[in-house]
Image (cartoon, rainbow, N blue to C red):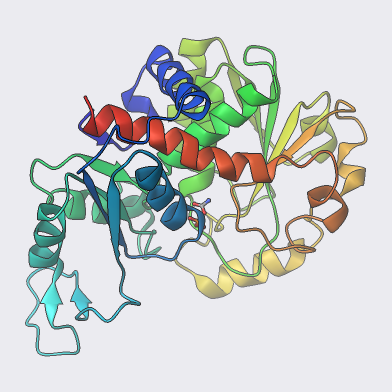
Length: 334
Ligand code: CP
């Protein structure tokens, strides 16, 4: 495997193969499988799970990893093209990225959306530009403007772990309130993952938070191939009818994507979009709650849901390490 950038680059069978490998490595550890191998990790955006789970995954397979991020005592990084570097930044990513890549056997990169231009983010322009600098090094997308494949692979495994049906299972991806406008990467990756898994997918969101046609079209194409279905609604009761799982996530208003004041004014009216027990009234009694984390308690979801039997978020986060071990194994062991 040379790139792990998008679940859409793989067949469903290949995804299931990676999940089977993750299970095997959990059951039968291979602590020397990647002996001598080094993973470079470039974090241009913050993280807890991705940062630690990749390091833990490499250690468990006998290899090592190093992290570079702007918060460390590195030179200030410039990413704009064609700029005269007479300001604070001392180094351009055009040199920094190939150097970092050259020290490892594979590289993981995280670069969140800048949210300055919706089309640029939908096209993943910044990530693709950085990715073009790694040469022939195997590359892992650790969350870009529009994708989070490691999260989606872990989420697929989590759904399997809890025996949530693939074909016929109802998966509700719900927008939730958050004081800040967050990127589209997780909702885009999640709706596609659930559709590719063959689920009956409902995107539940308020007016003004529609997922762009490019995201919905990709998910619908995956559903067509898998026998699943994707619909979008503003009606919570309709969405939750018979739901097996609700996956909460906040994202930016796509109506006011680059208009911070417009987004703020709209989202401030939506503080009641906090997942709580009444949401589950007409869902299946065992309906589960998922979230990629980090999550704001009492804002995105009530404590009693997060701390109660519906929540599978800790297993979901643990699965990040297991599936990334499988990706690294395929990438670095061959
Ligand atoms: N879910 C996720 O990617 O978590 P971090 O942002 O903490 O890495």
